[in-house]
Image 1 (cartoon, helix red, strand yellow):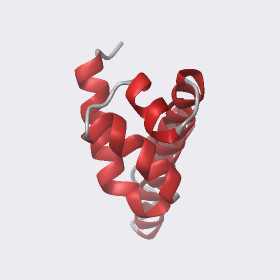
Image 2: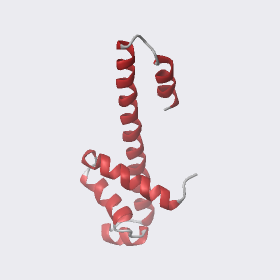
Image 3: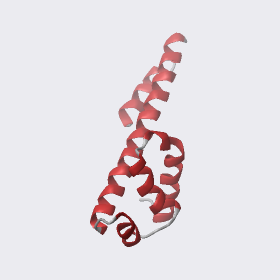
Image 4: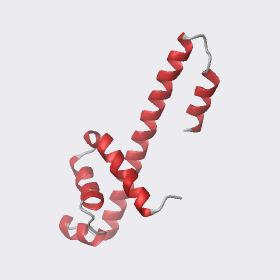
Amino acid sequence: MENSLEKKQRVNLLMDLYEDLLTEKQREYLDLYYHEDLSLSEISLIKNVSKNAVFDNLENYEEKLNLLEKHQKRLEIIDDLEKDIKEEHKNIDEHLQMLRDL
């Protein structure tokens, strides 16, 4: 289980990688919370929504970032599989298992 610092670092990295795929609203919420280090209460005042709405939005946006990361890993594994097929199936079982594990 990751601690809050590890989670913050992971989300910041994912934001750097996938920021262009997020909507403006998603970027704003994530930026306020993870880059500006504002509390849920502070964001709720800025956005004029409840703390619970801020929390729910952040959870949803973090999940989207995780899905984007998994998708990218799948694409990399598929590329590896295609290379492996061209090289006479040397590591195909390993790659298939990696896809299953995601």
